[in-house]
Structures are given as structure tokens and as C-alpha cells.
Image (cartoon, rainbow, N blue to C red; front, side, top):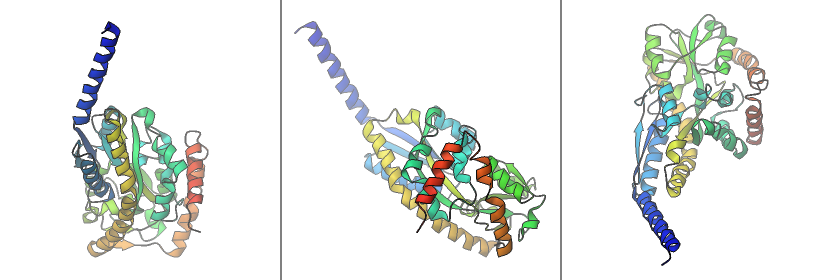
Length: 334
């Protein structure tokens, strides 16, 4: 055999051995999240079962709710570096990395949770939005709408005037702060895991979030009052580490993304069902309010221009916001 032929044959054999070894190798997928017993948590458990079954155990999935893998900035860093494989979180928390992630926080843009679910998964929007973090080390495995926003407070919030002068925890986006400012209050960005202790110490007067995550986190034990404003829907996603994905054989990457597609409709339904259940449970254990029609209409008028003022005029968010508005129009129920 010629030397060149021998070299080719040797390389082919090595490649075959390497490919076979990779096919037998097992991988770990750690999924973190700041919350517990909500659609973040339930979708991660669904994905765990699906991926482990379809991969025949070649991917071992471990789920870590309630900030067990660290505070939000640490977990974001983890998926960027590849030390954590997946993170279930509202995309607005990535605003410091890519400003366009906050477009789905726009108040008043969706009709309800179901509309938000359809819009963010509208293909032209979903494709671009899901890859906003690709150059920074992560992509979206799946997106869903996880609930309506509400405001939980230490003292009752029954009318708009009640909010004046209060300090309310918000996500760290200009949209959230602008919305709270319209109420005469101050938005205070703060890690989710620090919110309950901050309310206990009266560092803040309340929190704007989804009742779907606030009830399981027992916020009602301190913030005895929650007002269902319905002015925005919280969206979530599972964000996957590119560094980890690149280590997987192609068939396992396909399994991971297929699990994301499979869980998406379930996650959206959990968002609706768990929101409704949390509202009922909070009413049993504490106090639930809705604004009067007059105040609700006024709130809509106050909130209406916020997204256009902030997102449409910013070159970093303008394109993504335009795509979202197209998705919103295309997915409205006729």
C-alpha cells in the first residue's frame, strides 16, 4: 500500500473511532431559573423527560429552580461561558447584553397571554429574536408567554393615585421604569431572589411581576395586596449555551431543539392556567384588586405611547420592535 493511501486509511479509521466515541459520550444539561413551581420550572421538567428519553440517556438533564445555580447575572454569565447549559428566564434580563431583548416587555402591545404566545412565536420574529444573543454566546431554545403582569404591594393599590411616591421593583429595562413612572412611582431594578427580603425590610413598597411567579414564591405572605392591571404580558425563554451546543453531536442538538418546539404549546397553556390558579389562590390567602374602569382606561392611555417613545426611536431596538408589531398584527384573532 502506498504511503499516501495508508495515511488516508489511518485518518479515516481515527475519524470513525472519534465519531463512535462521541456517539457514546454522555452530556450533562443543567437548566437553571430564578423561580419555582411556574411555567419556567414545569417546562424544564417536561424538557428533561423528553430529552433524556429521546437521547437514550446520552444527555442527563438536571433542573435547578429558585436560583440554586446563583443569581441572575451569574447564570447569564454561565450560559455565555458554557459552565451552565440552559437558563429559563424572561428575555428582558438580557437587556445589558442586547437592548432589543426588551421589546416583548412593551406595555399594552398584546391582547392577552394567548396573543403574546402566538406573536413571539411568529416565524419572522421568532427567528431573529431567538438569535439576538448568538454573538454573545447563547440562543433561544424555545419562547412562551408565561403570564400577565400584576403589582403586589405592602399597602393596598386600589386606585391610580395610591401609587404616587412608592418604590416598586421592576425588571431592569427603560420600559418597566417608564411604566411605573407614569403612575407617579419609582421603578427599582432588583434581582428576583432579593425581592421578598427587600419587601420584608420595607426597602421597596411592592413589585411588578407575574402573579404566576409571585404566588409560588410566597410573596403574598408579605405583600398582602395584589392588583391585576393586565397591562402587559411576561414572556419567557429557555436560552442555551452556544459553547455547550457546539460540543453535542448533530443528532443530540436536534433532540434539544425538538424538545423546545414540543414544549412550547404546553408552556403557553401553563402560563394561562397557572395565572388563573394563582389569582384564585392569592384571593384566598390575601387580597386581590382590579382597577375601576375609569382608572383602567386612564392607565391604558398613559401606557400606550411608552413603547413607541422608547423602542421605535432607538436604533438598537427599532428593527426588532417593528418585527414584533408585524407579528402582533399577523396573530390577532379576527
